[in-house]
Amino acid sequence: MVGLLAGPPAAVAAEKALRIIDSDTLDADGRRVRLSGIDAPERRQTRLLDGLAWNCGQVAAENLRAKAQDALLDCVEEERDRYGRIVATCFLGDGTDLNGWMVERGWAMAYRQYSESYGTE
Image (cartoon, rainbow, N blue to C red; front, side):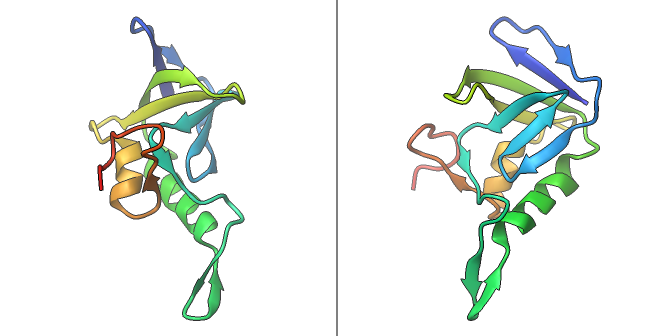
């Protein structure tokens, strides 16, 4: 379940299960939520690892799914992007910043062009 907080805090609870779209995008009751301040590989994106194609996008999305799929999330809306998605920072029930968790684990990079929330290197 996801609660979305926008402007003055007003929680909107999702009735349907959270669905992971890709490594930095969630679907909460039909609303697309883009994780703010991070950039992660697309679902079909690959990289060469030891000369072999590695499905980094799929693996990153699977790790996000494992962490967030059945968790209670509170997402704080920051803005809407040009595609109409909610851009938000999402927190697990234990207070873990999900966006930061993706960066810390190496499944995403800090997207410093838009935010300095996750590293300044």
